[in-house]
Image 1 (cartoon, rainbow, N blue to C red):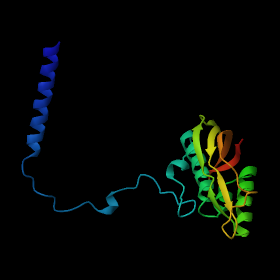
Image 2: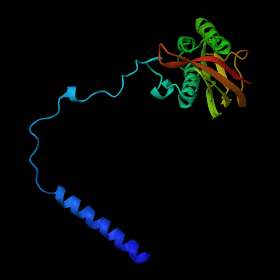
Image 3: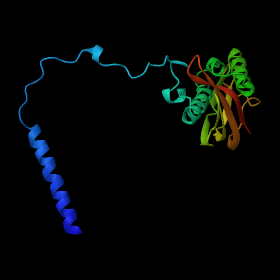
Length: 193
């Protein structure tokens, strides 16, 4: 059996060498290059969504379980973005009646209007359950950690009343629905307790 295997390997090596030596002969270069019209695009490019500094990734724009999960992870990154950019509009843009999403966006807008900023508070996704897919919707369980959040007033002092410690091992869930007009998901529910 070992000898048969050795013969098989030797035959493969000889065949490979023959192919490679055939490629080593000089060939005349082609006088023309293919035109751009001969390269057909395989699919239309999706128009960008989301803020310029954090555009929605293509993987979050597929109507399947992987796309739904990628969208939820992206939405959480949009929440995290508010630690450096006090802009809640993307949270509203990708919310469809999500009460907690609108509450978070409202708090950010209220704090920004008062001259407050955030330090910390990032949410880290520890795990996502297998999305439950139904026609045009998906829901999934989440487990996250949230780092300590310092809310700074206009003078840069920590606002103790609005700041919070870290929350570890929060459980919750997310629900999304597919939006045909934008080829993307929208958040319909987000809970973390």
